[in-house]
Length: 239
Image 1: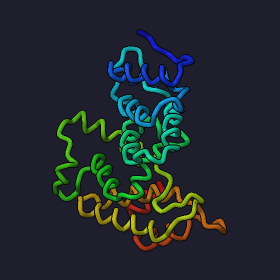
Image 2: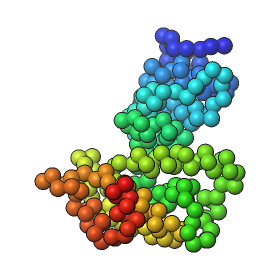
Image 3: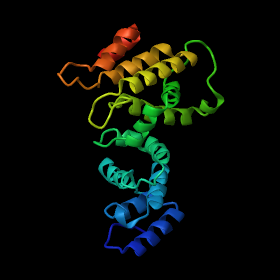
Image 4: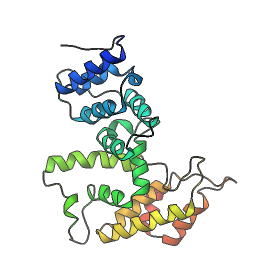
């Protein structure tokens, strides 16, 4: 039965949403509530967004990026929501979210805090150069499943513009930034991907903000470029 947006009360909308989720129709649920996120609990919004990427409903397409961002912005307003959980669901929606103004913001927060996550995402895009083995928990045996993970990894890394250690005012915490780069490169070497790791870091550094006097890139980034000085880093920066 087709279900669309209407002037539902909060109680009616929550009942409808629960019924649609229980029936395996998350995309229809999204369509019904996409103008009324404030009428739902954060938990219910999370359930919808977690189920949307794998929904297989007839005549129900993936929601538009703008509408997805409105739902995520509603979650951003709730400090009790687990940001790691939001980051995980953003990964499944990344091919759509990366084109929006907000982007997969929680996922980028996680990447900026966890160099190991950065290394893991790179592992799904590039093979090791040393013939070694990755951690068992990183391995995806099914080829199609691996491809399904690689695609959002590429989109997320390619569109990553806010640097680790970057503050709300745009300036960079040099110590935090350099610590992230150091640990990411250590993991890149450990898992046999030094060159692609440097290249990916260089690509991200190309989005660095200028210093207050207009000098670009800012000092912490210039220092990293000079201190590391690898060809792969330079190539990524200039790509």
